[in-house]
Structure formats: C-alpha cells, structure tokens
Image 1 (cartoon, helix red, strand yellow):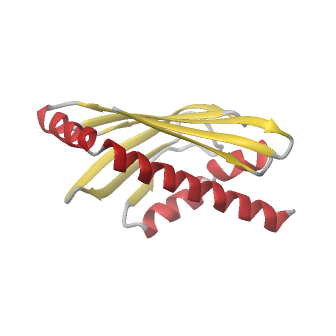
Image 2: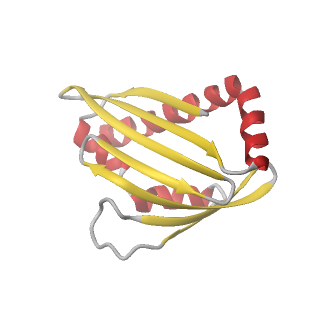
Length: 155
C-alpha cells in the first residue's frame, strides 16, 4: 500500500532540504506526539547509514520499528527503510527546485506487510484510504506552511 503527497513550498530548495533533514527537530516533534525516538548510529555527519529506533501507538497498539537512512542526496532526495516484526516501509522524500524561491516537496510511503496480522492491518488501511490520504495531505500541507513561515522569518 502506498501513500504519497506533494506540496509546493515558497522557499529555496537548500532551505527546504535543511528543514526536512533537521533530524534533531524532527525527533523532538515525534516526542511531542508521544513517540519514543532514539538515534542508534555512530555517524558524526548527516548521511546514509543514520539509524533510529522508534516506538509509537498506532490503532491502539504499541509498535516498534527500526529506521535507517539508505540514501542521502542533498539537496534532492532522501530515502529511509523501516522494519518491524509486522511491517516494512519505504519512505522517500524528494525535492525539486521549481524556481529560485519555490520548491516542490514530495513524500511517499510504501507499506509492506510481513505477516498475516499485518496483512489484515494493511487491508483495513486500504478500506480507509480516502480519509488517510486526506490526513496525509493535510499534514504535508501543514509541514510545508511551517517551512514557509520559518523561511519568511529568516528573509
């Protein structure tokens, strides 16, 4: 099952990439939403090989996953692979400069079930695809507006 969304951001590609790759801020945001996030790699620079352990509530159940960055192409793309007992996920973040001050941000998430209970979960998600896509699009739009506001404060 795949979710994807794109938003045009009124900010240069370098600024947008800096915001989507600010992992310390993203970790804090996840913590505020109730997730537990722990960085587990030894890297001193940002790049492929960064990894996190995460735990969060989803559909009334505590889920744990390991996330690893497998591709880092600044300022164009990042790709993450997530693995848990039940689900694996592939997350892609792509940026395209539309002009000097405008960037298209695209994010896609592909979920793959690893066992029968995960297949049932993914099937139930497929039934709610419309509302989940709307929520995903709304979250992406909010993230894009936040980036634009941060850019406006720096300009």
